[in-house]
Image (cartoon, rainbow, N blue to C red; front, top):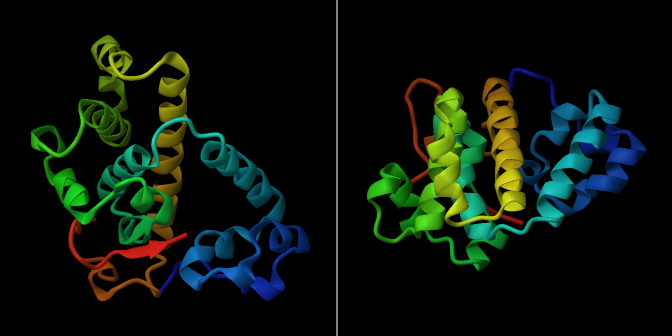
Length: 196
């Protein structure tokens, strides 16, 4: 059970309803908005930032999803690990690629650019002060400066909000594998839920 009270969409601030259109989403797709509805002004600001990250993205959806799922593993965010976004699946994300996240640097089905981005996201989630000149030099082999900034902002978003979501423990709508809090789990497996 979630540790913070969820607010049902019919009780959301009208501005949030207009922005999210919860009637078109499953409970799981409404995600953190059910909690953020306690503070609609802040929620709308966060949505603006998240929307800009998504709608103005220049990096491939597949790459971003791989980074997101690797960060989700370190955050142990159950809802983050359970979800696969349709845009990423349409961009070539497969469960085989997700399984490669167990040991991404050894995987032969990930590109060099994906491995560099995953490593960066992993370090953001586990040891951000280890991100030094060599890490940025490796990123520059695959990405321009703007894309590196975009990757950093996106990874920071995933680390911060993934950790917040993990503390809320919003697992009620997830497959059974993702509901336990007792064991460390991973996003690789066959229990994922594809969402918009």
